[in-house]
Length: 269
Image (cartoon, rainbow, N blue to C red; front, side, top):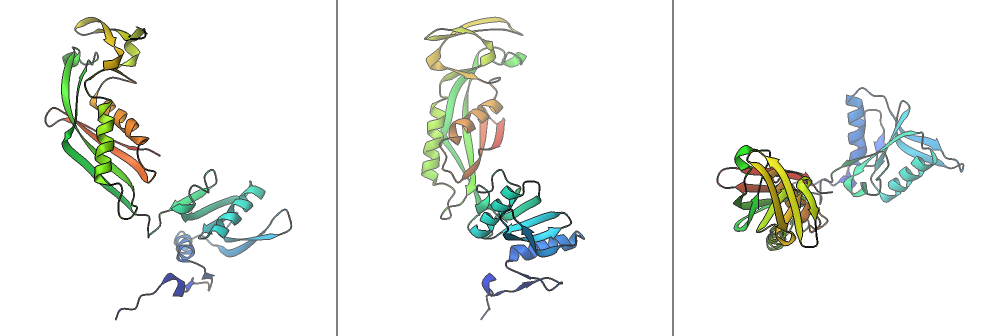
């Protein structure tokens, strides 16, 4: 039989005899000792209403509060509010990151229930056809088209051992690509004017002057040149708002023909 020791049955004691409340407090003490920093544990700070708040660590003129519980979070917020000039930082698990937004806080990922996972969706049906012009590249400065296949990587916290269901992810990617399929892509800076139905685009390129009247229904104006790198970013922008809240980053691979393409990885929070 192998004995399993739970956190609740373990005493965390440092070389000075301080008895810590949690493994995270012990970790902070070991880090400070390694860095050669003298610290005091459970240091009392007097608040404006005459009460006393006990902060976990005092290191010189700086203070560290370890956030293990909601009560710790409330104390941290109160001390910060009543003593804005105090050099105080909070350290806690990522569950307190949103609550501590705007405060001096370091988030440490939970060891349980906060695992980051990644899935990828790659399928021949995830493709779109498009035309474009790249006036800054001589070879590509004429009107031409491509069929591009796409692979999408979805990264986020796992819920019930899933980042996102594959079938749901595939549907979201297909819906995003439908916005781009059979469109003409052009940098919006070349737009001269527009009416209710058309864009009027003009630019000087290596192959001469282009003046184009483009139906709005089949044209996609881009904030930049119509490269596969930029198209990857556009797909991420479209997908980002459709992702569940546990998804933190997206990667999009676009293949332009065979054995060449682009990959953009972006945080969507």
